[in-house]
Amino acid sequence: MTAPVAAPTSSPTSTLATTVAAARPAAPSAAAALAGTFPAAAVDAVLRAALVEDAPYGDITSQTLIPADTRATAVLAARVPGVLSGGEVFAAAMKLTDPHAVVELLVADGAAFAAGTALARVSGNARAVLLAERVALNLVQRMSAIATKTAEFVALVDGTGARITDTRKTTPGLRVLERYAVRCGGGANHRFGLSDAVLAKDNHLAVLTGETRRN
Image (cartoon, rainbow, N blue to C red; front, top):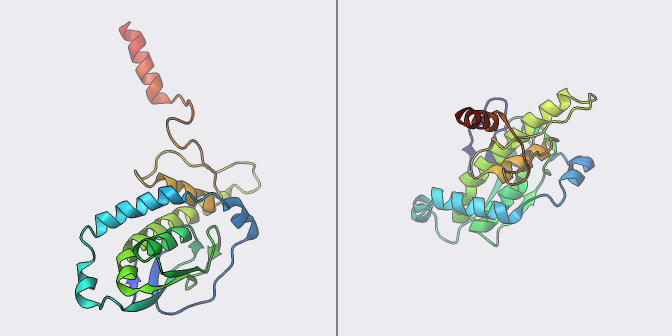
């Protein structure tokens, strides 16, 4: 069973395959920096909404063709090199459709990987794996693309004292995932939203200037 994923230019792509390659462990510093930062409750809400969007009445193809008790094992494998982000998202998606699924995360978030590396493996109900597959792959692909590009920028400023940070210009509904991906790439988060800090920008100044003129 192979499911190719289209990805942005210069970003890692993934595929569900049936072979396993050697995994590259995460650097201890990256794992330590990300420890305890995964927002599980918020991610669960994203996954539930995505699954309702993708299969509001279930996966009718799998329900038609695959016996209900069929088991499957699949591997998340990288097509190109990159930096992983979203391993826990992959696992959570699979667990959401099959609470008894066994998910092995073979590479940690924040770790660099080579093309062909097995990133994760899942065993569970075949219908459930196929139901979660596209949502899981799309999110891991997007998050890893962000982490990989962030890591490139971080490398460019290494030794300069500069810090790579994100903004609020995120995909609506996916901010918590995309900001986590920035951290996986070695970047830092700025304010999460408008409620976190006062930040006067040109649009505020334009409004204030216009009001002053009218007065």
